[in-house]
Length: 498
Figure 1 (cartoon, rainbow, N blue to C red):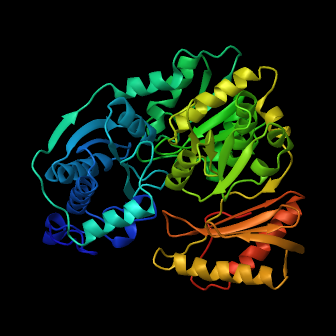
Figure 2 (figure 1 turned 135 degrees about the vertical axis):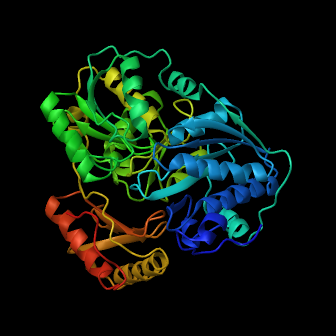
Figure 3 (figure 1 turned 90 degrees about the vertical axis):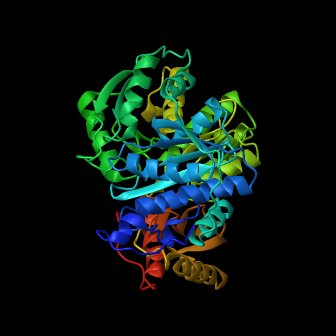
């Protein structure tokens, strides 16, 4: 295998013949590129050959489940990837169009060791990528990703006999059976099902109806042009639309899903958008009644309530704050035998006996319906109001180029640590500590905090702030964190802000 080129001009002879892969697409735990500007189809074949070579190098049985999301170019990209896997002598089991969690489920259902899911997740159209893993329910972390990157970019992919292709039908039906089983809701429940015309449109309405939930449709027609908005339940645009639909329909809540269905967003019966970390606390409270003394993992962007909530403390819950990112979180949940992991982005990792440990927005939706069934006299807004009050920002992402963002972050972390060590204040309060497990989470003496980290899969930094006191303090924390961020000229505009 020859080394791929980092840049080949589209509409040239070389573009149709030679592998082109931009190195920046190999991210912390996902491979993600703009297509066709940063990777072409021969480049995707080179990636498949590299992935197959990595499987053989690690002694993984040469069988893989492969799937694609619902975008107009994902099928062509998957076929190019499959070609490379087969060149490496891998037996490919193609399950067709799918959600990412359906592909993870296929590893268990078909009893195969590896998975490769062609998806750009919640990124807008124009992006593509692959979520992959060898050790179920885990996906590639930084070590596996850097090993794969070296194999591919150094042209070390090796062909091998024995490659084959099989299309496997029926996985979607088995996946839905596995999610719902014989559960039927016993209280009336009316749910806005928001799929933003993405892949979840082919799953979520059917799953709700099977549970006996009354469905209020919201953009449930499959349409890969995403005519209303890009399906991303962390974006205020989608959450506001879900809220409007709840108010117009009188629904009990809205559940929304991202482009590949591994995340779930929630709006309550009052149209209040509940950020996913707070939904995690609501779920943790409910699960702690059934499983006292459980351990829950929360990512560093999440609310401090997992550690401070009196009800969770009373039930012996242990909170573990860990690195953001579906690969990091899956691994951590498995490592410390946690019952579940919760990410502010809406990735939830429900482990045995609830789920299988991978992130599945559909599983979360089913479990939220079960939670509502176990609390028949309470609305989602009742459950929200029962939590200790905190004020938090949405996830805000200022631009920082992929090749610069980690260096920028290192300098920002150093500046924030220095601020703490010098005894300076943030939002007028003393700094209790700066946690640097994943960026810098600056924690104040009253438990309020502000975070800056680098996005693992887009050219951005990520900023989140939470106050246990007031909206004014939340805004003051953001203003002071942003003032430090603005000392870096390489940081651009925010995608959304308060």
